[in-house]
Length: 594
Image 1: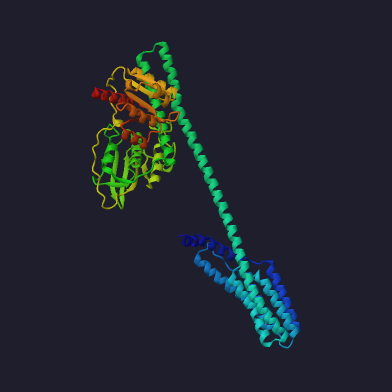
Image 2: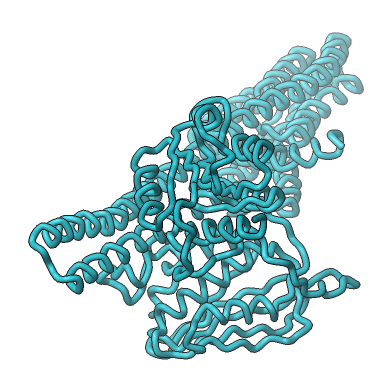
């Protein structure tokens, strides 16, 4: 495997190096071209004086033509290189370089004087000097350079071996050795140059990647700052309301306000507490999605029962469902439900009087699910940002009863995790349509039959009006004094008898377990035993004890563990109705035992 992947990784880098080598080789010579032309004129003048004027003029005509070609008609490089146009450019460059050096090498024939050994030696030395100069200046592309050297030196070597004096023949033999040596030097120099270019390009790439990473980090930092700034603002709103309403309640109790006035204040406190709880739950959910705390487990999901279940979220019957009975998707059921629940909640909030439709229809390879509402709609310029954090359209006054602008942000994150492409169509004043396509189940998989399970301990919500047995003994293991005092006060108000301990060790050492009916175990406790270990110990010591795990970290795994052991699970902040349901379950259990 490594042997096959390594060349594929090197290929783009090698292509970039070859492009850079060709660019360097085709750069204009500028003043150097004029200097070379003057030197060639000097050589032609020497041999016109010592040997033949017509031959020297013929050679200078060739030099003038190729100098004009190189200076006035340079090779044009493609704006963007591809493997095809790179090969074509390399061939053109090799041809032009060969023509250039062929004209210079023609001196080995035109200016070779068979009758004058001294002139032969002078010509041989001049052309060998040109060879050494051209080896590192005419081009950096190896095939072009090697062809140029051969065309420059071979003519004088051949003339020396055929028509030259004995001394010239010896020089020609030396020229053959020089040709071979320069060929090797050209290849070595080109290899070193390519390595240097590769290092420079790699350094440039790493620098660009580092800068891109820095920009992305700065963008993410700015996004996090904006997120936490908005979260701070929205968290302070209900906290401020609770503080002010608490002071109002204190003043009302001191001044003997009427029951109706007190009830209005208590209702305001309840709304502020609910808004604070909703926001903290959404922030926690975003944190869990970002941290990938919940594993995604794709399975067959019957869509019709899911959509009908979501339609019951609205008691007014405004949510309608249109879905084939055989519609079955292949995805994570928990995440799909969270996506649709947020979309439905958003539709209900922003279409208070309108109709909401949950529609599902078949698409190639999947099922398209849409949540359509007849609400206020979203303007085109606002549709790109509605999935952002704390973004709300039509709630500029930031009314907490219409949410905090995190529902669609959660939808966006979950959809990305599941690989779903969200779409939005909306017309202001006419409503919005949010949709996506979920994959269908693999061929041959049957629709899972609906299961009717017996009620689980954690599913009993109870009834607030049911009475509790006076003196119901409740063991409260909670290390937070404020929470413990609040639980104890509510339990006393209901006629129960709370017994509060700060740690598992203290509860096991001091509590009379045989006189306890219910145990509320906070999961995060100080000491060696946490709430789960304490619950297991309590169940072993008192099998008939009703046990509830209490924590802000109650998740799917904790609920599954509680259900396996026959325990209840209460997520902080605990709702009074849920707590009362646990006590009522303990009451019924005690009545059956007795």
